[in-house]
Image (cartoon, rainbow, N blue to C red; front, side, top):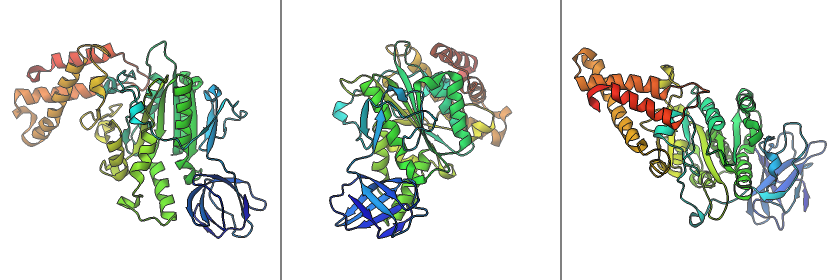
Length: 438
């Protein structure tokens, strides 16, 4: 059905009156005289009123000359293994100058989270080559492990390093799906060049919604990316690492749409359903029974004002299985990656390390490092009050341990990939050399 003339235009929303037979989530095509056709989606139906969100926005549209065509379809993506090595915009349209994907499968992007009954418990670890992660915040295949960062911290460099160095075994198919929401052209170029230089581009798929692209497009971008990941994982047997950045931009787009709809705001103006909305994205990670492949998620979010209690990191922490927290103080010391291991954790680590998965000594070494580093902060605070020369031998050992832990264990090059053996050997050397605390 096609309707000419609309009742209202509000931000990115179009309100159509007299609509019959429309369905929630139905895709519509919106156009005006002499204007390009734009894609929209039905987000509300109230009797004969339909509210449509237009992904490209409603700029230059008018009430009388705008026409809306209801397609009877949901948002879909064309899929085949040819998507590997390709780059798409936030609505899965090719932006690399190559022709459309040869279609093997059509998939609706509004998929649901995995049913807990169909899940396989994650146990096999993913080797990243980064000591802080492999040794202390181990990433497990099928896990969702976000990076909590802030403006000016190297979260993009860390995500790119994980993507290019991650491995799960020589005989396994491995792929990366990268979804960007609201990032700058420079950041997009950085990831593009990193994947090309590392040779990763042949097994990666990029979905890019840039800073100058419509904000409302951002709510669809991670869903397109995850639908592509599900196809590669559960139909083609790939073990897929999904990187989502920046989830803060996604949440702000969600708030903008909620405000335009006139919904009652929750904490800091975000919609009350943001928890379930984020869960509908994060819970699509995992391993399914009787299906090949797996999906591992690394969402990246920049904490507003570096506040870890802000609704976005707070709700993300409830849904995901841990977090990697980047620290500005470590960054100012020149430590890369500046991972603060104390507030960071991997809740699935205990079941993915040890004799059957990494090495027998891994759990004991990790416990020692955590215990010792927990005392470093207190020793440093005490030294600023009474002076380092008046500290006890144990506190002096803690100071020495903290310095060496940060400079030798945490700190490594952006292109340096350490084996698990190297990571544990560095840890053992530090613990041997730092006196009575061990």
